[in-house]
Structure formats: C-alpha cells, structure tokens
Length: 229
Image 1 (cartoon, rainbow, N blue to C red):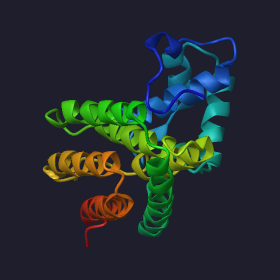
Image 2 (image 1 turned 180 degrees about the vertical axis):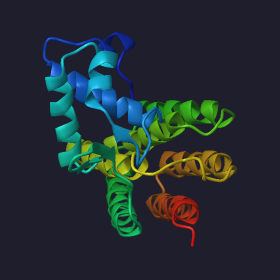
Image 3 (image 1 turned 60 degrees about the vertical axis):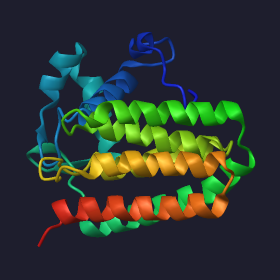
C-alpha cells in the first residue's frame, strides 16, 4: 500500500511483478474514467480496450466485469458494458458516508498530528492550487481526492483511507462534468486553506465545522448541475 500523502513514482505505471494483466487492465480503465477519456453513459467495447492496452480480450473482459461488480459499470444484455450514471439517491447516500468518515477521521488526525504530517497535507493543498487555473477536468478531482485522503491518512488507519477513496470514486467516476458551473474550484482552495490552518492549530471543533461546510457545499454544487429539475 502506497502512502496516501505521497503519490507513487511514475515508473510504477509499468506492470510490476505483483500485477497481472487483469489488474493492469482494471487500473488503466479506471484511470481513463478519472481522466474523462471514458464518460458516464458511454458504451464500452472490450475489443477496442484490448488493442489500446496491448493485451488479449480476456483480461479486459475480466477487468470490465470487476468494475461492473463494484458498481462503476452496468452490463446491458445484448449491448455489453456502459459506464454507470449515478442517481440522486446513490449520491445522497455516498455524501452522507463521506461526511461521517471525514468528521470522524479529522479528530483522530489532529490528536496524532506532527510537523511532518502537516507538511504532507500542505503539499497536497498546493498540488490542488496548481490545477485550479486549468480547465475543469477529472484530474482536479483526483488531486482533491488525494488531499482529503491525506488528511484521513493522518489518523493512522489505512482502512479508513481505503473506504474514503472508494466512496469518493463512486461519486466522481459516475457523473459527467460538462454541466458543472465554473467558480467552485477557487472556493475549494480557500476551504482547503482554512482546514489546514485549523488542523495546524489543533482545533478539532473548527476543523469539523469546515469539513461539514466543505462537503455540503460540494454536494450542492454537484447536485445543482447533474440533478437539475
């Protein structure tokens, strides 16, 4: 398991001895979803993926089946796989879980905070700030995920971090971004800054207040665009 606060080196994108072809195909396809090369509602043709990834059809089909089991894809009889589109009910449940995870983790994180952990969180904050000026992409969401995962990782429980990443991905890999209005990203920068400050000051109550507002604002932002009446 990689440290959440420090991304893996680029050469780890290569197939390692512990990664088989199915795992590689699974990871690469999921990366395509994060990079918005594959969008919710899109039909997937496994033959095309086999050519693109340079593998046979079997590992690709296995990878698509795994993603379907995890809820990222839907299998449509006589048509194949499509990227799952999130429903309002699913999104509501997932945001509720995310809030519970982060509010619980930040208290433990603050009790265990040290200068090294603060520096790591600052680095993740700066990574997000660098992409805000760019066009809206899933890359920004991936970096936002890393910031929050780094915070949760500070609590010292890797299972919490894994659960958080799963919940985050179940939200952001299953909706389109074309209709999202501009402007929220810059507000996120300010909220991240406030959160890091509260954690540095070991102010649990303030940090939890910021997280609750931050998640609610993000939820409202997403819902206003993808579930507009």
